[in-house]
Image (tube, one colour):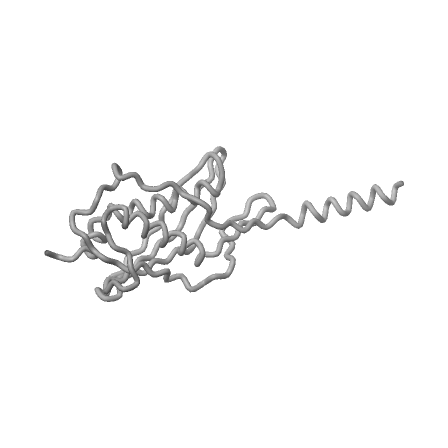
Length: 176
């Protein structure tokens, strides 16, 4: 009996100390309301390109024996797809045939656990090769519910910021 108790205690200790790995994949995010960002004044065409070559799982956080991983390429593609849908909704044409190329790259995710909320940071890098233009910034958002919701709302903020940025929109829209 004592041997089984000792074996159980040893096994429990190993399990508790080994921790758990969590692999996060994008699932859903809210769309940007047309009231927040309206239709574009000029129509334009753009090719959105996933510029994140790293498809390996990257650690972006650890909390109490739990380690969180994300595939930056997968998250960037999710952003590209949703940004394309939002641009289409506002009158832009998103096509690989377009001469205007916008390269998009997400990286350097960070998970910060607070007392009541989870904060997610993501680094965004945009590039328009034909205009020799680049822009980078870090976007952050929180959720009192879960890290997954914080990630989705951070992507929402990225899309909203891109569409509200006059410099980016001016570069994408042709002069008349």
